[in-house]
Length: 304
Image 1 (spheres, rainbow, N blue to C red):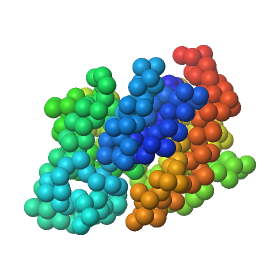
Image 2: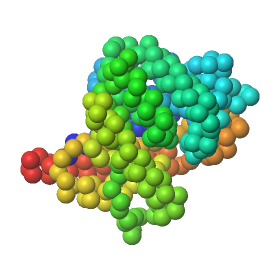
Image 3: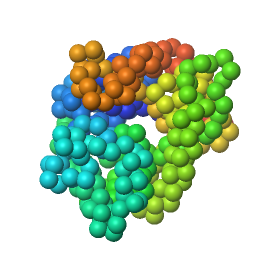
Image 4: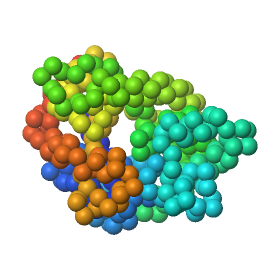
């Protein structure tokens, strides 16, 4: 197995970005995903100049669920509210598309495609040097079938090296770990749905010649990863002995002074200020996590 520790939400705020860069400088982080319409995007990219030269991989984190679009409000009216912010949660956006008439569906497709194009163009403008285009999305919106289809259609204009597939093996929470929170509740529903949607997207990626990670960890314990949970997931995956495993973290806690960004979104305010952000940062920077990665990497080399 090729293991890659990854962090989402780079560029969302200054403090979140600083925490993520610390996990690369002093921890086991390999890559992170940039939100181009974050609150600190441009400054965060400038701040990461040295880390990018040292090998930090920067992916594009498409965002359709918080903040403002890159496109003007006139170009994506179906996606925003009266304040110009994104208005749809994952399920609501998908439902609005499915229940719309043909004209509404075509409008959603056009506006999503327009916003994806705008975010890709801005991503390319922001980077200090050309880089391969590797794409995932905030809360996995690219798994919504019509959004994934529009993303793939842009492959001819913007060659995409890889797109994330959050296909995670099912494993029960270790008895000694209490860190997965609602593991047997909403995360199990999310796990089942994202695995199903990943299976639907996979053949489309293969037909388009777009690569993807083979395995994934970070859904069942979304935003609340623990060493025991990662070990349990890797134990399950180690039986395959092949492919890339993306291990997803959200180590970027926001500063108290930044919480006003989410005054109208108490759910996000709680998430970005949660102690779990600090715990995941500490885990990425810990010796036991480094040793765990080395153990499985060595085991894979011996089995090759």
